[in-house]
Length: 381
Image 1 (cartoon, rainbow, N blue to C red):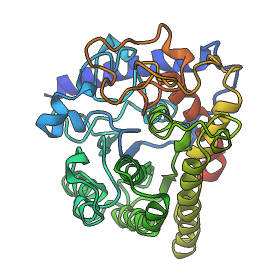
Image 2: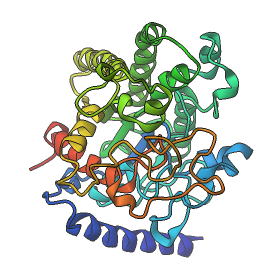
Image 3: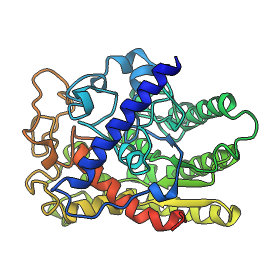
């Protein structure tokens, strides 16, 4: 068993070396990539949804095992050209963050053969911050919830994990660990929008969603976390599936990037409340490093600099893997379904499947976020 683990670590190290070279030498990225290695993180723990799930969803249920995420073309640019349950053509932001820390990729908690020496990933595709029963109380159709593994369930998994790895006192074990609480909370609004909830109804949910996330942060602090990142939401009005569903001929509904203003304003409203709550939490825990992960402005930076970063200016809001319409997205013929084509070069697309992003986009977003977070992490110089 020990030999097997050592072999797995060796393979991970080789993978890290090759992808760090890729990350730093890619001619598409004419930027100096900041490094998290000086922070000396020895573990990373991730809570969240499909933006960061590295394989829990495809392992937790029959539905997940037979979902599109469990097979190609998902993962077609992952090492060994294999699907891992990641909702992309390759790596996610958490993968690039791990590599920049000099750590192996995070194994999903549900991987019974996973090596969790360097942390664990508890994120699940489709997860919400609010428990499933509260979503149902808010008249969100339970059939639309593809998982019940909401944030409280993921925290229960984390508790069980720490109980078996560091017993009752985890403070020493976790003193050099990085925690990412999210992105999570975005699916509340995705599910609500797809079921016809008004923007007013969704705005009314924001305080409760934010409070659940803040409670989760307090829980991981209780576990022993001292450096925590809490990401906000993307500008959801720029995502192909919502652009398709809420398409309008009213030009004033769109901003300069041809994103839907009202949906982006919902994301900004949520992000503002989350940031304020984090600032209040900082007063309560002055010795804990709490950082807001600014996904919204990272994504805007990507749009503003898209062509110089190698993206096709005609495909900034189109899905690479999809079919039909202005945004190359049809909810009845999603990526992975028979006959649904894939673009010739996913590296020139921001969006992969109408909902999730390409490896190329995630890589650049990770670069921006690391650059933004690094001074706030208070790492040794």
